[in-house]
Image (cartoon, rainbow, N blue to C red; front, side, top):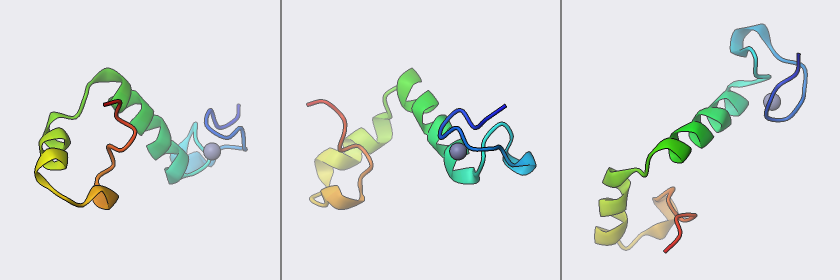
Length: 60
Ligand SMILES: [Zn+2]
């Protein structure tokens, strides 16, 4: 079995992923795919700092 994100050998602690990073990537895909983050949406509109909002990929 290999890491579903980068195909490296998995680490027992993060199985089936090879690292926490890959586990986070998978979790992120999962969450953004299932619902649109309503809280950060509001923040993005009220704040003038796009660099610290993770929602830049959101289609306008
Ligand atoms: Zn990986």
